[in-house]
Image 1 (cartoon, rainbow, N blue to C red):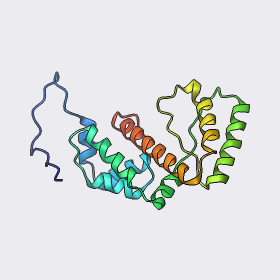
Image 2 (image 1 turned 135 degrees about the vertical axis):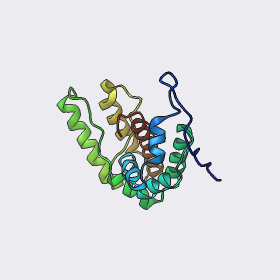
Image 3 (image 1 turned 135 degrees about the horizontal axis):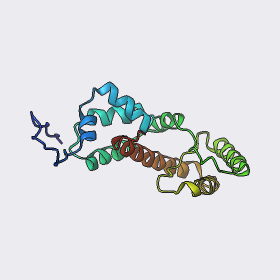
Image 4 (image 1 turned 90 degrees about the vertical axis):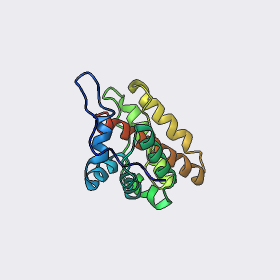
Length: 175
């Protein structure tokens, strides 16, 4: 499917009429190396980042997110391993109790020993006050998965993380 080229000159705008999407326009027009670097901060997969960069320009955010999802669904086991290697545990609020940190560290170590990779989870819609509980519950729950089931769950969490980070980047909050 061919993606239409952007118009040769953008329509005239006034102070009162916002542009279609300045962040998306910037995303579509920055040099490929720069956008791949940005994309790698959203999901550390060179294949995913190259694919998203190569299919620019995107006419709107929905099409960019659809392309991101599709590219994430197509990641090979090696691509997933590369993406997982670039992940870290979510940063928890400073008021999280020491015991909770110890429980999380122990659960994470058990997870990594069982599956051989970093635990990932998207906590975008979880209030900060509930993050530690959600994280611990998810690790404990997912420890019961068989390796193939967990690979599917992990890939989905990576896709959700990439999507959220992409949206954050376009909103100017950074990945």
